[in-house]
Amino acid sequence: MLKALLRLVRFPNLLIVALTQYLIYYKLLLPAFGQYSLQPALDDEHFSLLVAVTLLISAGGYVINDIVDFRIDLINRPDKVVINRQVRVQSAYWLYFCFNLLGFLISLYLSFHIECIPLANLFPLAVILLFVYSTYLKSRAVLGNLLIALFCAGVAGIVWFAERGPFQQLMEEAPSIAGRLGGIISWYMAFAFMSTMFREVVKDMEDVQGDVGANCSTIPVRWGMNVAKGVAAAFGLGLAVFLIYLPLGSPELFTRTSLVFLVFGILLPLFLALIWVFRAREKEQFHRLSQLAKLIMLTGLGLLLLLAIQ
Image (cartoon, rainbow, N blue to C red; front, top):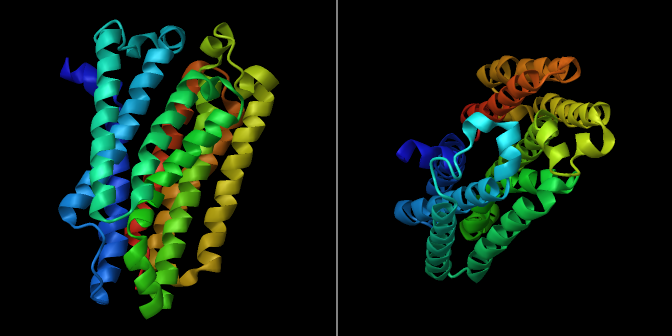
């Protein structure tokens, strides 16, 4: 039962979400705040609660998505279906309700703790958008892909938003350090957005059979596989150009180690993925491409550890 629940909430994906936020907080923001004796808006315990809220939003989104897509998943990935096999649909709805209720209560508490009411407003907005995505936008060309890409970028952005008070103080005391930090976080958000768009289009091509049967209007269903491959390649090439420009435009951020990691850990797999986009024909080939795209997204986190902040 536990294994089924972990699969339902995409536990590996939740780990990546948590790792992203902890890296942004402990690797980037806290060291800079500490150097100038600035008090963060969230201490360790309250920051962990912020991460918990993000995980609850994400887990709830995965649950409602699996509930809505139950019949499509029976075609696209029958061996991975959890709803009505290992977890009853009624139980899944209860999980969805509990995740959202607990997340809202924690976000409400945090918003009062740091005196930031907009933080509490973000939670219901995110829940509503994910519900709309699962029930409507996911089956619409481009719009659903864009929303998920924005959410992935927002995983890092919400930490920056929560700590905007001390970050503003850092801007006043050390504008160069604050500018570099802001540039790194903005870089990662752009990376997360483009790499997610690439993978989302690839996943649409992988799931085209079930989507056709469900009358979904995804990019490959509406405009064909060749157009979908072109869109995926456009985002992949855009990401490659962005990553190549990054050390040229901001050389102060890169050491020899980070440059080597960028080339061999991200760019080479990305160029391999671009080749696979045009060679892929079968569902299994698109699945391998999707897994490679996920690996590229993960290596972007590794680069965060290697960038020169100070």
